[in-house]
Image 1: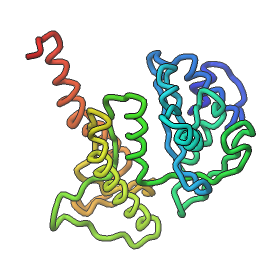
Image 2: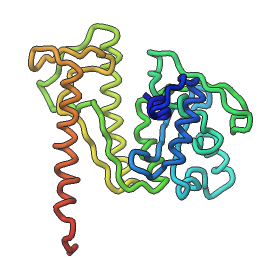
Image 3: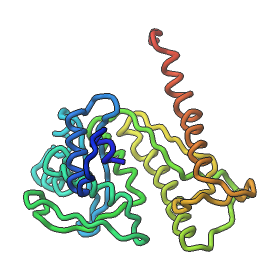
Length: 262
């Protein structure tokens, strides 16, 4: 999909992931701010460095805020975990996406070899996702001056007692249950802990979701006693977006356009 965006209508052979990441990054840099092209920030976990890595491509006005810290020691520590995709790290985009899709323990980690001129001096590190990294994402957004964040999650909160579904007994389902529960807790923690960083944080999430992270062919819904396909989940996701954000937030702000502020 990324290659289709980069090549346009040209019939060219798909390049290697590293070359593809570099071309896509160059496309973003050249068109940043244009319709359809936005700043990018990805957080993954480095198992060998015991810290998160932040890979970001932001506008020129924000780039200094990625690294700048009040002391030399703090700035040096910052360089260990922040990779500027518009600079030395422009070939790491495909690696960042692959690492973010690597589930800890369940799947193989993604291996990334840093450039010799990078902070890690050509070392090879193992990267993967971290379920609780949402708070770090919002923290990084606040650091570069983002004023509004919209969190979209498939993990529903528990509505209360006597609403629990039967536990999964298959291995894929058990892992999925843990990831869903961890993500729901991460969303709760993130939205409460960063309230002073990002001024406006909105959350779009389902009231009920019987499909787990690894149910690639849909799941069984105990409440309605039927199978639910992925297409239905996606359609309900669009409905949630309109009901929870577009109508109450975007629509309400549009109603006030041109009106005076008291």
